[in-house]
Amino acid sequence: MIFPALIFVFGAFCLQQLPALPDPLWALVCIPLLLICISAMRVDQYGFSLLSRSPSFLSRPLSLLNRPALVLLSFFLGFFWAAAVAAIRLGDTLPAAWENKPIQIVGVVASVSELHERGERFRFDVENVLTQAAVVPRHISLSYYQPRVAGEVSAYPGINAAKFHAGERWQFTVRLKRPHGVQNPHGFDFEAWALSENIRATGSIKAKADNKKLQDFVWRPGYLVEHVREIIRQRIARVLAGKPYSGIEQALVMGDVAGLMPMTGSCSCVRAPAI
Image (cartoon, rainbow, N blue to C red):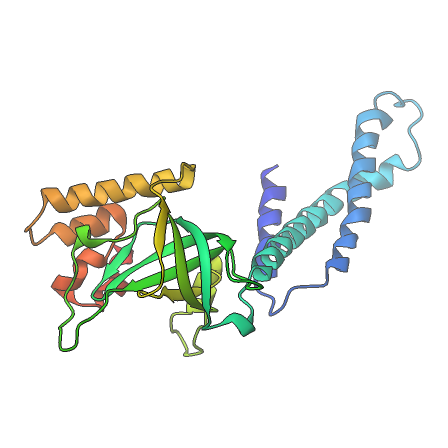
């Protein structure tokens, strides 16, 4: 079964190299291959045991076709499985007509907040859209910017300054946009990364809107894991408070590079995940 599994993975890999998704009707090619495999398996099971003295004239050709048909079937199953997953994910998108427009939504904070100089950023699972006729993807990334006073210099807020915590249910008014990448050679493709992470829109929370927390914690396995990660991060920050290597420990243990910003600047945030 290892070889068919590898062929299945290879089929999914080939789908990812295409510039566009194939027509779903091409999936019908799997039907005759599946019938050949089933027929060959039945011949192998009954044709030479129960009918060993007088095997069917089809047993030999079907036996020869069994392995090539299984290889092709594994390839096309992987290919069209990846195509189906891609079609479902691409279908969950933000319409262009709703970009940069205020939309009121209800959902759950789905990740530990990533703190930066002006606020924080986190993933958000949308449960309900309150704005009439608005369409919002299920999984988005939101940023919150601290209100600034004229003439005030931005400062790093610190680990314990997070306003939004994993597992909390909130009602927000947001402005969203679809992920966009750049075509610079060898540059970071944010659009491809967002698709792989199932982030179908990014945006910001309107600080002056009627945002309110509806529930302290939503009991789901994924949110519980993120909540535990947040507790560990706070514990590390508390125990190593004032230590110059506190941010490095958080980056190594949690993959959280926010603590590196005061020491090394924003450029280190790109290199830190490689640690």
